[in-house]
Amino acid sequence: MANYYQDNSDIQFHFKNRDLSRVISLVEDDFAESNKYAYAPKNQEDALDNYERVLAIVGEISADFVAPRAREVDSTGAQYADGEVAYPVGLQEAVKRINQADLAGFILKRKYGGLNMPTTVFSAAIEIFARADASLPLIVALQALAATVEKFGSDDQKERILPRFASGEMIGSMALTEPDAGSDLQSIMLKASEQSDGTWQLNGVKRFITSGCEQFSLVMARSEEGSQGGRGISLFIYERDQDMRIRRIENKLGIKGSPTCELQFTNAKAELLGKRRMGLVKYTMHLMNSARLAIAAQAVGIAEGAYQEANSYAKDRNQFKKAIQDIPIVYEMLTTMRVNIEAARSMLYETSCIVDIKEGIENSIELHPESRAELKSDLSRYTKYASLFTPLVKRFAADMANQVCYDAIQVHGGVGFTKEFDAERHYRDVRITSIYEGTSQLQVVGAIGGVVGGVVFDRLDDYESENDFLEVQTLHKSAQELRACLEAAVAHIKEKADPEFQEYHSERLVNIATDTLLAYLLCIDALNSDRKEKVGHLFIAAALTRARSNLEFIEADDVSMMEFHADIINKAES
View 1 (cartoon, one colour):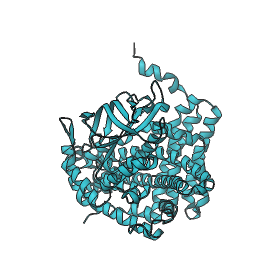
View 2 (spheres, rainbow, N blue to C red; view 1 turned 120 degrees about the vertical axis):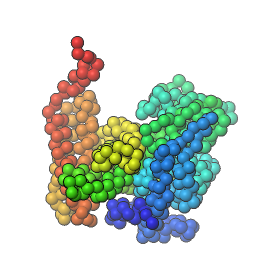
View 3 (cartoon, rainbow, N blue to C red; view 1 turned 90 degrees about the vertical axis):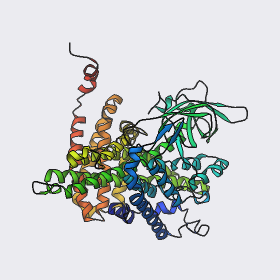
View 4 (cartoon, rainbow, N blue to C red; view 1 turned 90 degrees about the horizontal axis):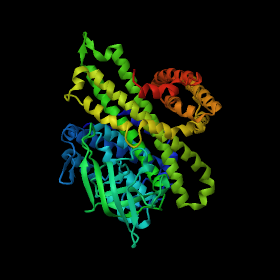
């Protein structure tokens, strides 16, 4: 039987070699539930074995059940008629199989019927599912909605809602975007009005809502009359009734199995989640950061699927009396695809571990208030790391996967442009990953503060102090050269003290920072694998070329693009 976990040695490499001890200790609260639940791990080794068994189940379902149905899911797509939406049969069957395997409550606590898995394992599961069918993770990843309720909801809300998520009875959506408010969520206008009995009513339209047809939604709405900006926004729990109408679903380029809905709320009854005015600045940002990490995992999974298809084809396709895999210009493409996928995966699991530690510290403080003073500094540090790494990994993974899927079609040649092979489906599916939950450009905005503010250097200092790179000193020296480029670029930006100049070069700064962090992560990987050292050399060689070019451009102080762009774009030749 095929298995998308057991046939992926790189995912297994990370779970074998990455130190998850602190993640496990925090997630399991030092194994406090080991005697309460039969399936709760009793120690570190037991927890790791549990993760491996769960991922093996995910891998088996993905390879043997989801992947064979993916083409039909894509060709059928979600269907809309008379105000109702139907998922493709293959996707319905996949969700049913996941529920039968008790995976619906992947990241929820055991007291609600969940598995209490860390985000790191969840990211691996999303990646594996995405390799089989990119539409499926959009249902699986929405478990993050339940985690948001678990983190910020009242005891009553948790007890009513979370067991239904954990059992698979309920699937949800996050209703954020509006026709005139895409990435700029501060501009949303859907209105929430408090009623005399303490309930709320929602009025307005939401657009581009993934699985908006489902029975549960977290809806972002303007709760403060006459307000503008993020402080007038709250987050609401809505369970579908007759007061919300699905107006249509989008006819999309890819991920066709997942319905993207336009919703009309008319006096729809809802309940407040958490506190008023915190909907965007706290709750939705938590929700979106979870979604961005899930999209990074989805992107890596799609890229893995595209690479596997391309590599298999290149082995079997003969031209000029040899397999095209042996033609240098082709094997260079395939090797670059493989290297960049593995780099993205390293950052995906690094970010997931950071998020697990940050969330684990918060939970530990909540469970053990006496530890607040001891953990306060650590929480601040990991919160900053999570805020930096999440946009970086979302952007890098999505852009990497788009290139990999582009190259996968190229490897296939003419047949790659047909539906005879899955390369064209991966190419269509992956395109959205650099757009939804914040475009790649918006991720630059999210990350630039941590780059210029020095958070990236704090993390690099951690890597230097926690690892002995003597065994890979040549590779490490190259990574240090990347860091020197980053330091020089940041120093130049700070010396200029010009916000417009910084904004102009923000993408170049983020590019150098991303490459530098990836270089160090690959150095760490190389400590456990000679093959990974070769991966690191190839990645860093290309990264250094990019970094030197970006640094040269920044230090040249050439602002002609800033000065000329309006004339070039808006004026025609006379």
